[in-house]
Image 1: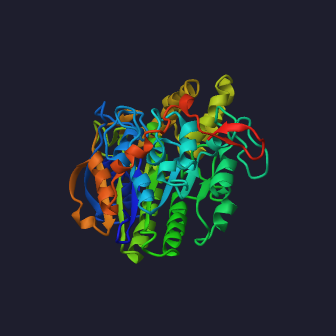
Image 2 (image 1 turned 30 degrees about the horizontal axis):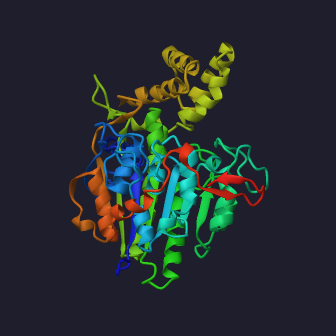
Image 3 (image 1 turned 45 degrees about the horizontal axis):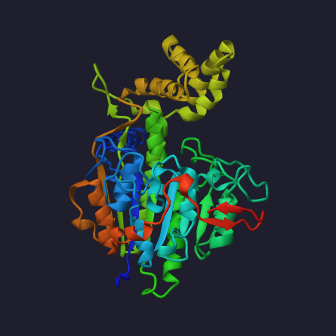
Length: 488
């Protein structure tokens, strides 16, 4: 049954973003711009409550279970992508929206096959099965109709759509993360008519009137942290958000209103979480501010399209961030201002030098500390901390870099993982006045379904045949270029 009233739903997920992170970013902007203490971010006046985040098997969720709680409005175990606690596929809000006639979209700064976006359009028993997630995302479920379930995808993760070995033809991804020879990049275009774009120029050339479906993947893996992003190479989260909204709005209004009732899109600021895993405060900050910019773009869209609702929240908090630590009641936002690079990028440069102690120390003292972190008076302890971290694991290195900055700023981290803390719940636009209070993450999922007047559970029986384990996925097709029979 198709909804009788036109509506659009924009669901925004700020992965790993807790209340303390919002405070940190707000106070940084206040302090560095000499704004009054009453200044508020674009999110602050949209705060309507909080979200509880636990999964079915832990009080501390992961992103897969957290996103599935939103997409299916059901609790599930950590690691589950679009499946319930019994490891069976559960219908998602995106699939229910598609079945009801809405157009659908996913935008993320992670790999598009990562746990959060994957949980809206795929069904696998573990989040690491990104080969299979990619196949689900660009295939149709015959029970839902012949068209692919996602009309628009933008983000990173080209490598999970490229065959092993990669197809060197022009325009194809040049790196593969797959374990098989399936060329999903070509498959999506040839079987389902996707327009596939992978460069900044191709992104810029996209017009609101261009035909969907669209597969836009701009990096092999995750997109860059905002602090590292080369604007000539990668679009920002805000730019992808604006382009996606324009294209979905045009595509839905180009049809008879009764035929296409609107659109559903999930937009994720994914790297907020990853910076918190690294205990990297400057990268965390810059991705939060960019997420704010995307929220501002969404608010502007809603102001001119009042049939649209935005709901925003986080799947969980990451890092256990604290502002200030004993014995002083103070933190120093200005310490974050001169940081020019993420801990991830810094460690990619210094870890290869770990066996050449002299070269490593020289790199840390002449480039990393003064030029990339803005620290010109480093202590021997700070130098040794980064040098020692570079000789350890990638995580140890990133934590060593992040903690030098954090300690100077008086920012604390209790973990390199997730916490069970509640997170903020935000809403704006049509129907937002009725959203108030503390909500379980499954209740947030139900709010999404209620607004679109769809029922994800009605989709679940249609997914019973779907294979959720890679070795059992046996649907096949013939690759038009090679003539080989491959799984799809």
